[in-house]
Image 1 (tube, rainbow, N blue to C red):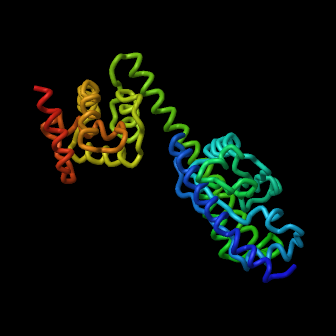
Image 2 (image 1 turned 90 degrees about the horizontal axis):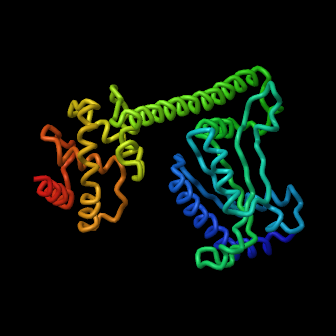
Image 3 (image 1 turned 90 degrees about the vertical axis):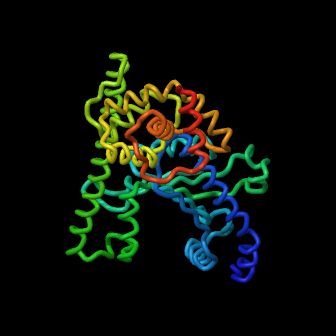
Length: 325
């Protein structure tokens, strides 16, 4: 295996591999956002030549650029365990799966350690006629899917330098297994908390629909999100703006009943708010939380925003107030 010839070939095809991971990352981000799957980060990498050469020398590949399946890779870091299954389904529906592996499956029942889901996939031929993916067919991509806690374990384990269990001193094995078990349990606990929160919101919304009015008595992030879904069911969520909205509401000492009355009034002006947003060149879809922000500014005398409003926003608020007279 001639190293110089391999380097020439590597340098020639590297731009294609770089382009495919960057374009695929962008597509995956769009897929996840469209499906409201929260993620911490999506990262990409293409193996540098020295790492590539070391691996193919060890594996003794005859066709290294075809046989090496992790030449280019993408990693998705999620918050919740359940979302791993959703991402696997998403990737399976949109790409050609070449192989898959759940690293947890290789652990014994009494073992804990590295956990991650790996998929090998290729871009569908039908995509490769578009400018973004032209000449990128038949390139394999390794996708790693982890939760934040899986990633924390993997990074620390990597930093410690242990490649396998046999390399760990026996007096440290138990401690490492214990830490891994705690992180695995924490993953399950966070997922359970999310399930309970979703159930709480769903019950609040269903009770409100039955009663014909919003029924929650306590103001917290879950009841605020339930309120936003109840009054603006067709509009998009945005967890960042919703947290900011809750902080504003609490700072101005609103009750959940007051917020419900403002939301009810805002519903009648949603079309006008969105029309004025377009006229001011706000190139974005109005989120549930942003609509309620407008409602607070237009229909509450006691509301004091924490940040200075832009001229465009003040213009929209002025026009809505004029229509209310």
